[in-house]
Image (cartoon, helix red, strand yellow):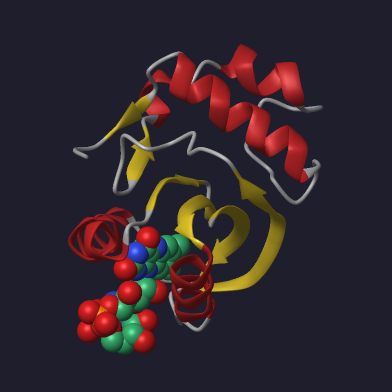
Length: 141
Ligand code: FAD
């Protein structure tokens, strides 16, 4: 039984590029054994992450992530049972913000900034799908 979960959160004060890399390293080390795939985006202090995998594995990891002091205001945006993965290629991919076209953000929101708190979970998921389609995700499987 596969599920897909998406949440947004705000980075705690000290989180910068080094912490982001540490989180990605840890994710890539842990997720394959858990059968979890997904994508993480970090922009202007906001995390947006999609996790896919078995229901128990995803729920367990999500609870662990929620308790992580490196971020706050964790808000569940969407949770669904799925027949197949959309982000199977990444143990934890990272959105390459350098390749993020502002027009893509404007397509889905009022301003060309990533603000998942201001749009529906459906819109954030649509944005993620386009990022994958336009190869704006980096990171080894
Ligand atoms: P350790 O890495 O040794 O951590 C032990 C404890 O210390 C944990 O409670 C951890 O939250 C905390 N901790 C670790 N480093 C720091 C730090 N620099 N400052 C403050 N507290 C710290 N983990 C995954 O496995 N897969 C993911 O996809 C994933 N995505 C994440 C996304 C976000 C936005 C964040 C913030 C964290 C994510 N994590 C992910 C990390 C996860 O929350 C746990 O920290 C990690 O899984 C625990 O790894 P560990 O058991 O090896 O313990």
